Image (tube, rainbow, N blue to C red):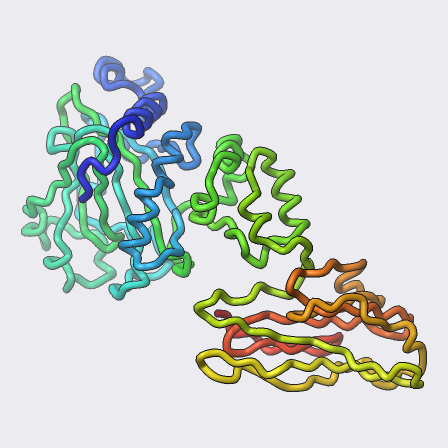
Length: 419
């Protein structure tokens, strides 16, 4: 628990925003069934979800405090927000089965929790008012008491586990506090009857980006909403990356994708992405180099032509390259479909030489129709103009420890090993 982690103007703005989402305590206390407020009298209400209309709530969910906390506790800088909702609890609002001790993993992961670092998920409550026994502070049970419970027993009945229900672990804390727990921690809701009390908070969850089997909400599904567009256009690169947006420098970013995103989100400042991306880029299989920690893999592609001869051969040569693990790859690959050509060496020529990576254009297969642009740092490009020449698609996925050293019609690269 981080007490008063959110304070001052940031907390006040969030409190004001959440007050616009839910009825006031007085309204819930003085009205009756059929008054239009029934939807808030159940534990399974239509809780407002991220992205909210409020910048204050969106900013709190993806604040530096929350992202820093997720990175520290999950042990990785590459984290993802996967859940953010606002909830309200009122007197007489039944918790139903949530009053039983339970874990959250059945609807937070496709599998089961794994205890080792690197596989954890982080759930949090962000309190927007003071929370205690009088307004439904959640009860938690220490993992030291539940480690031996079989994983399939995600909900515990009182008859068999009555001693755990006496655990005095209520998560009482002042407004602005953050309660942190894992989806494999047993906890339960507590009802209250005082009509002057209520509890408002945000439920926010993070996971390592690599934990693809964990999740709750899908952000692309929000893509048509006004709230989503408003959020994206004022968000920071760090916030967007935490939602799964490709980071600046990612291989996804090309001239076309940058321009397309600029048209989709006119208010988004793409300067960080443009500054860290190629000025021009190919649209297909040449991927970005691994980061410095993985060591750079340089792969050079070259056609060798016999100018003025009746035939020519196309060859791709991958130079030996090494990193801390030794030689990553080398060899010569004879491209199929180029031997036996009887004419037109003048129809084949070097257009651009970018050094690392490659691409080829032309031909009639339509795999990559039209001219391609130079990828900075990137490739050699040839146009094969003769109608008898099938298009040659040279591809390179820069991966470790193996790379695909070329492909053409009828040839399939082995599956790459991703970094």
